[in-house]
Length: 147
Image (cartoon, rainbow, N blue to C red; front, side, top):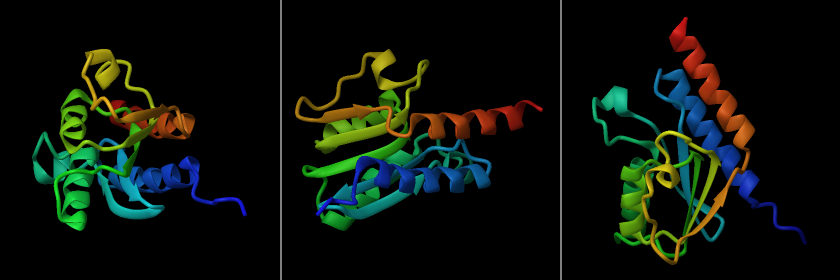
């Protein structure tokens, strides 16, 4: 039997979160954290609503997942996020020891790769999953802001 729980399947759930952020006027980034094919955390950017520069989708997801698991480490978990994490989020992901990060669109200006931020040595990264959909959502958001 084919496992329906692919990276694309979970990234679509992260994109749903990004759409919620978009609808709230937040930069449309969505994130989910999965363990054993079960979504244990869902989030999206809340920086405007909470008036908090640290309220990125990934930070919200890390906190929710740690609460769900009852501990600060996310070993065995996968983060699905629509945009490449920034250096702040990458730092938090480093300390969480998350096992895998799957992201959609690259962030050519502020992504952890561009900024040279290190992830935990055991963290596996997969880039570009549904990147076009994630990128289109960002473009739609910022074109609306520029009008």
